[in-house]
Amino acid sequence: MAKNGLYTGIDIGTNTIKVLVAEYVSGEMNIIGNGNAKAEGLSKGIIVDIEKTAMSIRKAVNAAQEKAGIVIDTVNVSIPANQLQIEPCQGMVQFSGGSKEIMDNDVVEVVQNALMRGLVHEREIIAVEPKEFVVDGFSEISDPRGMLGVRLEMKGILYTGPKTLIHNIVTSIERAGFSVGNIVVSSLALSKRVLSEQEREFGTIMIDLGAGQTTVSAVKDDKVQYVNWRPEGGDYVTKDISDILNTSVKSAEDIKLNYGEASTERASREEFFLVDMVGKTDPEQVSEYYLSQIIEARVAQIFEKVRQDLEMNRMDSFLGGVVLFGGAAAMPGIVDVATRVFEQNVRLYVPTEVGLRNPAYSQVISIVSYVSGRSDIEVLVTRAVMGDVPATPVYTATVTPEISQPVVAQPTTEYYEEPIAQVTPLTQTKTESEPEEKEGFVDRVRGILANMFD
Image (cartoon, rainbow, N blue to C red; front, side):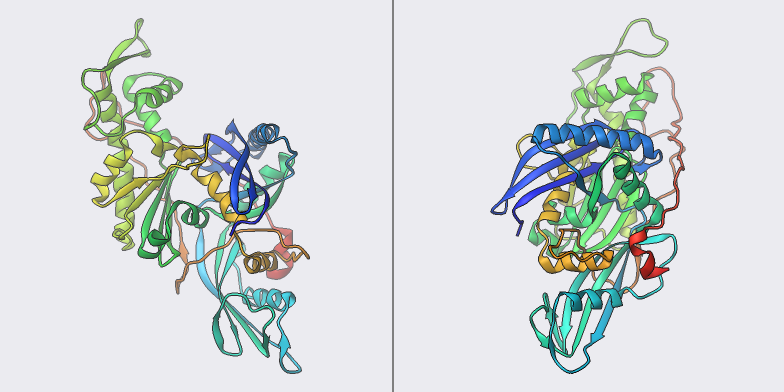
């Protein structure tokens, strides 16, 4: 149940940075402020320029706090699925002198014992989910505090990510003049917000269509079973329009937003719009159907690659079907294309909050909702992981999957060299050239965990 108070979330996207401020009263979310800013310094969802990203963060946060009428000093942020690794962990502590009442410090000790293991130098802990506590052999205990026992065990799931990825996010926020309150695993937060209890239990595929990348998660038995991402998103659609119609990227983005229809079955062959083309004195007429052919070709291609990845990992058929969200999912007809490709039920998630009724806000809303809804024991476990256990817990992120071997979300490195599908350009056929990868990461050693793992 959500706790009373103010909660702030930030979604650092490839094209836009979104900030949300919500006040919870009796468990009800009230949006009191939000801010957006054009994202600078990111490529395919990854921070490649910390200073530029920090400036964008500052603009977005300033806009949100001006609307909310408060001063923001701490924000909660999510970590994307890029190379996320999930593995089980287990710890035990034996009390000397016989039975004793289990206290906060005992929970902290058993959690830290569960983490006394080798950790690859390039990786860092994001969160730990306590699946169950065991007191003197009695299992399935959610909160052992106040119980009597001589031995306490904890079984949980450990989430780790690349140090450079985490470092760049945290450092960008700090350079902007703010501190990071909680780091949330995005797939976990979204599953709690976007999916119903039945969908989480029977199995559902979540597809987050962003501008710079597409993130895929499979949830079943109320656990995230699979995560993956592909470096293609809405920006690829924009680039296809720009290349085939011989127009600027900015013009292509406007055309996509104003006239874009993802499904050719829904597009009109009689409706036309004007396009300013390079090398042409006067604008040229283009039909909505032709534009839809361009869009559908790329969208179907992305979905087809996602479907192949899911089939390869045997995650392609769940009773809950597929749920779409993210900025690129707002395009009309996107559900129709996904239904044809995945051949199962597909629905679009749209937030219900006033002023935020767009799939693009799914991520930032899920961060706030997830952080506010954590139990005290989940907060204590996460603080134990961070080596910082305050008298009054600070609400943080949690995780849930149950798997025996580490699962790593790896990027798909292949890029499409061939022209998209069967779309004939109005002027000449062009072979698309994909945006170049940028690399600008720096190593980071998080001091708060150094003593635990070095």
